Each structure stands twice: as C-alpha cells, then as structure tokens.
Image (cartoon, rainbow over all chains, first blue to last red; front, top):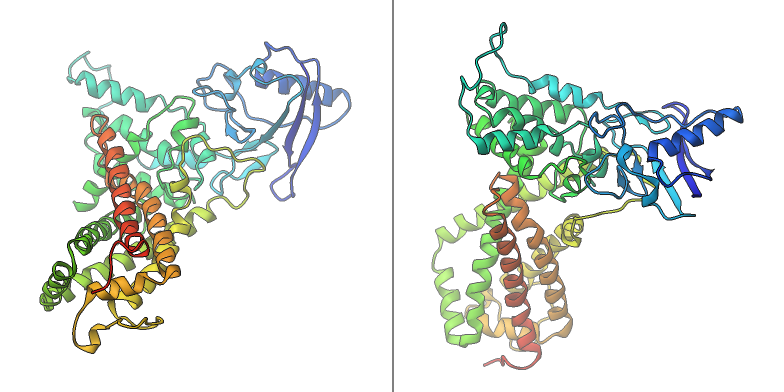
Length: 246
Length: 224
C-alpha cells in the first residue's frame, strides 16, 4: 500500500520545525504504524538523510512510550489502542497521513516527534506513592478490599502515562492522567494515609508543570488507549475539596 | 488561598458561582412567565419584589459577587489553558466535545454584554429608545407589564433577546453538567440524570426566555 506522509521535522528545540512530505510506498497492510515508520526511516538512512525520531519501546501497547498525533487524533483514529497497535490496513491506500508530536507547553519538544514527558514524573513524585512497612511480603487478604473498589482502582491503574490525554485536550490539561494516578491509590485502604496531601501535592505539581485547566470536553477519555473514564476527574475534584477543607 | 491558586480550585469557584447565577436565571424566568397571566399578576409580583427592600439588595449583592467571581475565574483558567499549548496542531479532530463546550468562552462574554443591556433596558429603563407608554420605575408608577410589552414591540430588541437566550441555553447545556463534574458530583448511576438535568434546564431557559419576546412580537401579549 502507498501513503503520503506529512511528518513534523524539527532537529532541535530551538529550531523552527515544519511538516515535511515523504512517500511511504510498498507498505504491507499488516505493518504496524511504527513498522511503517521504521521502513520509511530505513529508506531515509539509505539516502543518507536523518531518520524521523519517534518514541517507542514495548510495541505491545502497554508501556506508554509511543503516541504521536495522527491526522488530528492522539494515537491515531482507532479507539482504545496505542499507536504501536494501529495497523496500516486501517488507512486507505493512497491516503495522506499527517503525523505531529504531542503538543503542550509542559511537554517540550526534543526532536521531531519526541517530546519530554517528565512533567508526568514530577506529578507522580509529588504524591503518587503510599507509605508501607518494607520487608517481607504481607499476608494475602490481610487487608480486606471491597471488590467494587478493587475493580475501580484497577481501572484507574490501567493508565500507562502516554500523554495522549494532554495532547487531545483543547486546554492541554493533565487532569485525566493526574486523577487516574491519584484514584488508583485513593480508592484502596493502603492509600488512605496520604489521601489529603496527595490531592493537594499532585494538583500543585500539575499546575507548576504548566498544564491547562480541565473544562470537561471529554476528549481525553475518547483518545485514551486504556479508555480511562473522566469519572476519575470528578473523584480528584472531590478529594481536592475535602483536602482543602481540612 | 492555596486552593484558589490551582485551576481545580478556580473551576470549583466557577461551578458554585455559576450554580448561583443559574438558579437565579431559572427563578427569574419562572417569575416573569407570569406575564402570560396578565398585567395584574406580573405587576403585583414586581411590587412584591420591590417591597423586599434590604433583602433584595442583599440578594443582588450575592448575585453580583457570583458573576464577578465567575468571570474572573473563567478568564484566569482560559488564559492558563491558552498558555498551555503555545504551538497548536496542523490538524485538530474532536471526538466527543460539543459545540456548547467549545463556545463557552465566546458565549460567556456575549451573555455578560446582554445582561448589561438587559438591566439598562428593563431594570433601570435608561439608555434605550423609549416607545410611547414606556414608564420607567423612576417615574413613580411601576408598570412592568407595559414596559416589557412596549420594549419587545421593537423587533430588533426582541431579536437581541432571542439571540442572547439561545447563547445562554448553549452555555447552560455545558455549564450544568460541567459544574457537577467540577465539584465531584459524579457517579455512574447518576450520570444519566446529570445529562437529563443539562438538557432539561437549558431547554427550559430557551423556551421560557424566547416565549416572552416572541409572544409580544406575534401580538399575543398586548399592552394595557
């Protein structure tokens, strides 16, 4: 199959980047999106040109490293999947594919499609932890957890921190990520000790990183490869109110 | 104040202040629908409100405070969000966001301008071409009924009101569901009621608000 790519090329943060057209011809319909980029890069290398820089790691949809904005959709148009799990058969033959990096002030561009998402690490470091006695593993079921709570915490914990929510948000807000990381701990008994300080500190770190404000568009949930619900944003808002009143 | 320095805190302030103004709009419209019961009913209602005296001013102060907080917080979060993406996309595609959600920032200033016009038009009665028979409150006799009817007989005034009411309807459609989310009122079991409330109240405001100028334009409500 043949495609025309328009890829954001920017050699360094200080440079002014632009969309550059490439021909991606003879691509197998069974190739994944990243494999297609690999093939294009091989050909660029053969011609002595600089390959397109993009983030990737597991290529199994679980690590959260990949994810560009493809034709206006973070991770591409297929719902509930990361970019590495999107296959070229999903694009019609001869179509033009526009590939851009995740855009947010808090995600400064490093090169081409690679952005620095360490702002997420700062949010995690601010409150995404629990205090437990280290040592031998605790007995199973020593702390009872209601099934519904365990399920909801697991739904929040599905977040792989890819940053698609920020990229898709018209406000470049990180509320879905922050709320998922807060809720996965706050819903469980082990996460109660720091519950109030967690809400305060994670929201503070999120603000300091320069993300925008949530205005409930719901675009984050719609592009999330793990389909994390905006219900967790309401959970964060609730915890934030409670923590502010103490 | 640490609370307010975060966008989450500002959104909570917007939700609560928005709720107060929203509550006022609904009560205001329900009260003014009494125009369809005739001049005596509406004028008696207006006199009752004027008779509240200090309580009325207390209520107006609360309303003004809410409006100011709502506008200030909205401006701040908007600026923060605009700064959060200095470089935009070549292609932007949306999946779920509504027209109402995307026009909140334009509908808001439009509604604010309308409120100023509305107060000058029907509350103080100034700054407006006065048709014969238009009696301002300062003139002594309060005839709210006639003021409304004469005011809306000017077609472009009615048109302005109808446009503003439709903008308000859109603003409330997103606002009502959004304010519940912002204060954490969200539960899978109740979310369908949240959507219902947003549709019901925004449509009620649109229907009630449009009905009065439309009835006057169609001659269904005549001056006395």
